[in-house]
Amino acid sequence: MGLECKACGAPLPKRAATCPACGAAVPKKMNLLRLAAFMLIMILVIQSYMSKPDPDAVGPAPAAETPEQ
Ligand SMILES: [Zn+2]
Image (cartoon, rainbow, N blue to C red; front, side, top):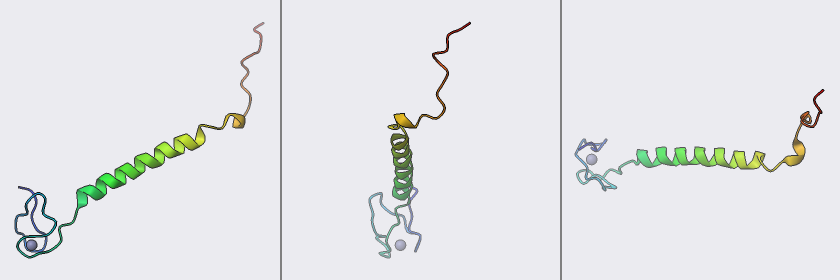
């Protein structure tokens, strides 16, 4: 159905870790892509956490308490 051995071209069962025809190892591209996406999301989350707890580092004070007139 979609999977076939890159070494010999034989069709592979879904859960095959190795080709039943020639014994070549079946690469797991999907898992690598998912892992990369997961790592990217984790990095973004960690970065947002790292930048949040920093109340003292507020740059120029906003002029919020200025009386209008
Ligand atoms: Zn094969």
